[in-house]
Length: 619
Image 1 (spheres, rainbow, N blue to C red):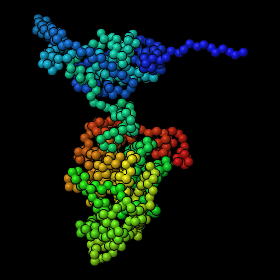
Image 2: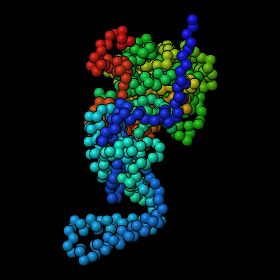
Image 3: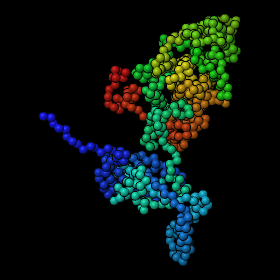
Image 4: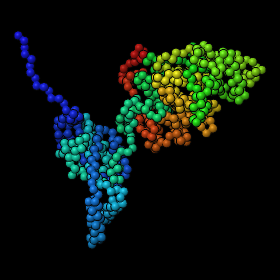
């Protein structure tokens, strides 16, 4: 009635060797073997340059293709090798000074003389005590490709590469499987008699790739593709000594695209992202993904009150040098210092007497609201603070503020004129979203009000960052040269101070610019604040630049570029540049996913992927 279950043999459990072993060899031919879906070929290195220089195989290690370089170094006692070298020197001397030397061809004589000199140099090294270790070196090159045709093309490129390195290689015909065993991580050297070569310590050291050409951390954000090695550039900025990054590149070279892609990836990991966006490009993407866009324009209803003081405001003296940074000052004093920078952005030629009277007027304006140097700001709400109109009314007293009447005429625009809606009022913006972008696009024709709005937003966001340390926050400032004013370098100094302090508040900052000369224009004494910001950016992306911009980088001793790196950024290839982390650099192309391209550049997405982006799809 009931069918008895079939008895099956238990399957054999996989061993560790089974799991790490390569795919079975399906086919062995004379000149290649097939490993699963791949075609593979192994080469034996049968000769090296007579005097290899340090790291001479650097470009072989960077070969673009699936290449494995396997080197076996076997240490040997030097005594026996010294005897062999002495015998070789005796034999060479005999041949060079014998009777037959008269009939010897010049080429043969020159070759013998070179061998003799090399042997004498080797003996000297061995006897000096600096290079007493001798190694038997065996090197194998293993090449793989998904098809036989691709393997053939890769083989041609490899042969050109090794020829330029001064190597001689031989294909392991009829010995492919044995040669393949020598490249496996099993310490097997299956055909040593075909690859044997003696190296002293100095020569052996030249085989090691001491110039690291990879930027690949264990975790982090993918920045792009390393064009030298075809590998990913993966950076964990939070693990670096500085969390800050600097981006520079000409218009149209991918600067803003990279910035948007990078901040999207950071945001998707759960971090907060704040953006100051003078061009409006980032704000478009921010809105698409559900972020909060705060529009700063003459017609906007969004207001950030420049006179509001946050209880969480960093009370370290932003005017202090490094040795005085620990000094804590009253919050009102700090706010007055920031207000001086703001007011000088709207009236660049402000004299010291004007500044003194303005400080007096600011203090009086706060006093009218019951606010002084000892006020507990934790008890105050946004509506408890004065607004610009209160300051405007205070300086109406011509006798007390005789030097501020010209300034009052300018302030009128920010209180009752065209800029009043975004400057005059109590703060009403919502910062509850994790992705916030201040859109300054409509101010791009108003350089003074744009710089003032940018500084106001920067100051406001900095206070927010210092308030919430529990969540990591990235501050991104696009077109940062907007606030780099040679007549008012303190605005740029404020950004520099943020760069120095943001790590302490669980954050990182990124600035981007296309105007390197303007970015470097804010200088006070011997301190160039643009240069200082770049110096505080351990990560840097240099996209294509004009000759003058490259010269500016060099003249300010910001970044020493090699000839090869200058060539990379002179070619004007969109999205390609030099990516720097500390002392390591790579030739990088900015990567993107289809979804990132759809969000950032819908027209280009349609061209690349052939799919129409509808309005609903874009959002």
